[in-house]
Length: 140
Ligand SMILES: [Zn+2]
Image 1: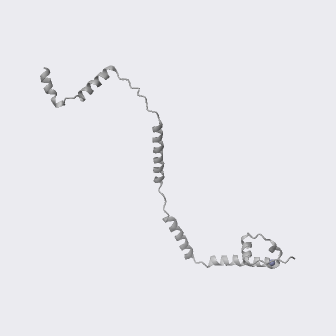
Image 2: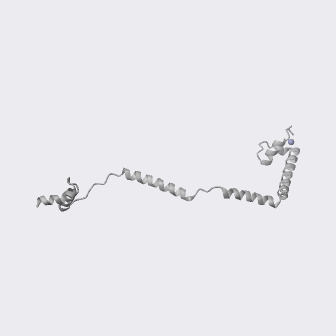
Image 3: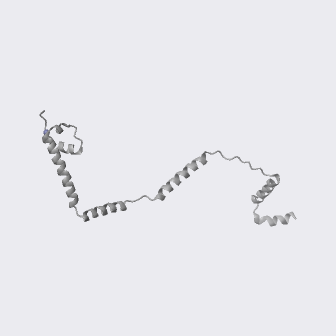
């Protein structure tokens, strides 16, 4: 048998986690015994520790986890929808700004045009409206 370095504590840990690259320890009775003893001790102490913890300990653990979960702020759903609505409004405004201006296809009849001109003359005349009755005196 080759002379090999027996597993030290670090290598024992690596073997127990299955990340030890060197597999020479399998050929060595001393190393195999050390690994088996460590694994047996670990599983035994692990189950012993879990059994030793009282129920109130686990209850407190659950309560602390639940309190953290309950106090974690949840972003309200409405915020997302308002952000989506604002984005849609911006996109719609941009799309409308890029559209060509509508052509004025409004046709005005001759009578309507005359009426509109009369209304415009009446509204936009220079003399004040309060003087209109005096103007009627001179014209009659
Ligand atoms: Zn060895």
